[in-house]
Length: 139
Picture 1 (cartoon, helix red, strand yellow):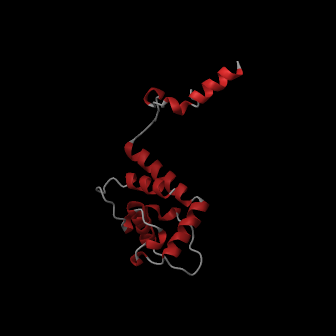
Picture 2 (cartoon, one colour):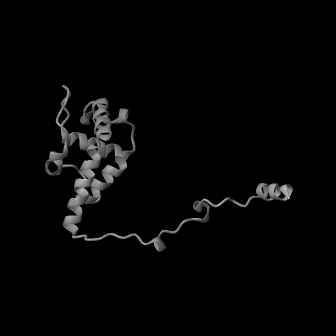
Picture 3 (cartoon, one colour):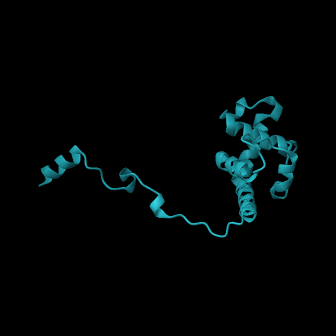
């Protein structure tokens, strides 16, 4: 889930180079999609998204998150809350609609001739020695 969200957000912000650094401008573009704050823990949205980006790019565990992002457990709890409530899905849908509007995409099609499936992926039973010997024994 985290990887999908970060990939979508990375693709949307075209103005950024290879490595994306979150800015307040990015947060303001999607701020209206965030849920109302709850509880007494104050986590800045910018630091939250920077922490998610850090985890995605470095592949570290939540506990290994640097202290500059805040308490790892607070960030993890917000991530779980937003994931369970579909907040990231809303953000992704919104950003994808904006990207389609910006690019002017009117239709998207997938041609099956370009999607090649390995013979093992078709679900056909495999011809193995044990299957052949079982069939011979049954006859």
